[in-house]
Every structure is written in structure tokens, then in C-alpha cells.
Length: 165
Image 1 (cartoon, helix red, strand yellow):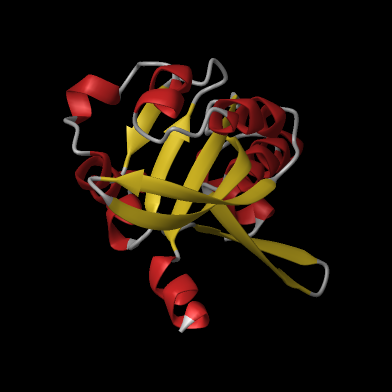
Image 2: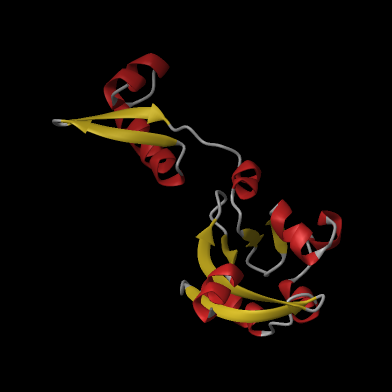
């Protein structure tokens, strides 16, 4: 529907509707297509974030502005062998040294809060097996406007071992 169509349908001033639609567009709730001078808006199709986390083979964690875990993928929980209830709401500093033995994990997450994306590669020893991990710290803004960090941890062990051979 165009802005004018929506305005007529809900009986609100066209300028007010345009401002509301701009906010919805920025927040990702609608999509816009331009046809000449007209802007046509459609509801956006979204899938729940929790479902998306579990589609990926990577280990994914979402941190809030206080660097506390908001959400983690099932793959990450299996990899570090922990229950969801033990990690959600706890700060990353607690786990950066105990499970990952990567203290700079928390330091880079703090830098990502300032808007800088970091990618590092680390070697990790777990149960006498060496893993090679590529860790991305991605600055994130949540639906409520709060800043956060998305950690995407990719297991690149097979790639590294193949290179060595």
C-alpha cells in the first residue's frame, strides 16, 4: 500500500503515517519499494532469531550492552558442554577464561560495543583435542535500540589440518 492508501484506510494524517512508516522501515518491520514518485510498503517477513541461530553450523552468542549472554545457539551449548540456564544472563568474562581460555574474547566484545568489528583466529584445546576457531565480534543493535554484540565462532579445524597436510 502507498502512504496515501494507508492514511485513508486508518484515518490518520498522511504526514504522520509517513513518519510511522519510516520508523517501521528502519526497525525492519516493513519493506519499501519505490514505483516512480510513490513509495509502496509491505510487511516484512521475519523468522524468529532463535530459529536462525540453530540453522547455522557456527557457534553463535548474542550479548547485551553489559556483555551478558542473551541467547546462544544449540551448537555452542554442545561445544562447551553447558546448559542454557547456566549461561543466559551471565557475563562473558565468566566464560572467556574458563571455557574458551581466550581472555581477549571479552576485551574484543567491549570494543565491538563501540562499533568496531573484529575477527580473530585462535587455537583452543578441549579434551586433548585441538580446535582452530575463527571468532567474529559483530556490533549489533537490537529491536529495542540497545547496542550489543554478536559472536560468531566458526570451527576451521578441518581447513587448518588440510592446509598442514
